[in-house]
Image (cartoon, rainbow, N blue to C red; front, side, top):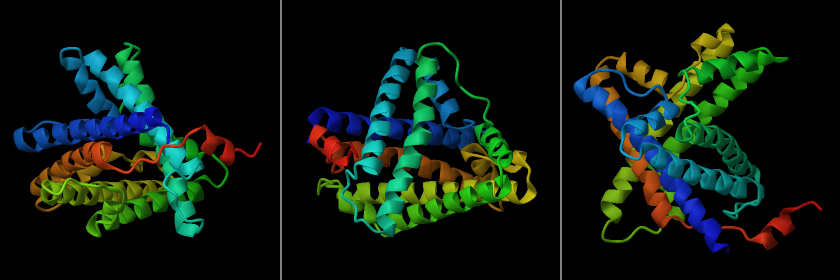
Length: 271
């Protein structure tokens, strides 16, 4: 196992955890004191600019997210988690590759902000992406399938937390395992709910052939806020995103990371 790669992967989990701690923290502050939360992960990253050495912190987050992207590629392409060669195993590996793509954009956004190149985004990334998909051949069908896939990913994440399946790859310290388990379950379920709502937006955008009906995390939180008892539910989901951020930090510290070395890369290469 490559120790440097392992360190980079762990830093990646922590960096992604920081993003969700910021995103959930801003939403939670909005629930308590009013106002608007972040318009997505890039906007949450931009909040670091107001801190001392904010650009340095953003640079560190960008480096960590680069490590996370590399680890996701290793999971998807090199089967670093040693998943079975069956449909669930291939599905999980495909999900890791999709995650690598999504976090690559987040890493680039953090890097641009750190280098004063802009990149905070306009909060409409999902709408722009949906508009592009709808312009492709069979675009509405394709966007609908993507929406269903995101809904399925949300349901799987809720199950992953509720069943404590994540424990298979975590070695929690016995003295702290009790409260850490509660944080992990709460965070995974909350993020799964947000994912399912985002998938519903995408499916509705495909059904209506209207990209403006697509939405991301900010829109999902606003949807929750508009429900009966929405203020309470919004606060709970925001706190859940904070818990998911803490889950990322816990993964960085205690997850089993079997980082590949060059021999693994050569074995996976078709050449």
